Length: 172
Image: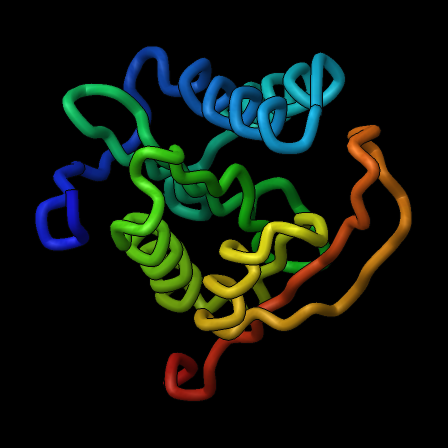
């Protein structure tokens, strides 16, 4: 499947979306980074907490579906009240859909949502070694603003914070 023939639809919450997003994260990070139960339970608990307080006027919950299955997600969490700004969270694209433009599509939609609402800052946490994701973030205006040797996932990773300021053209 090439980028021109990648077929997916993007929508919001559907029954099973929470479990599917947790499954995408748990499967990928277990296979590639040896993350286990602490990671999976934290993703599930935090995502469930987000969905329980989700405010569609402030927050964005997007899931890409292919043949009815969730294959990617991105969430903007503004209602969580962080002083850092809008928090980009749970951004993942299934391995079978990577390289087809889906990640750029989702990230672009999420950032447009933020710009339309006037969010001055969007931030995310990740870790060193996710080079394709980092490249995508940087192409969309994110810059590395912090690193720490803290490894909350016990995966021997260096955590990073990226931030994107609202482009001047979007403030008009």
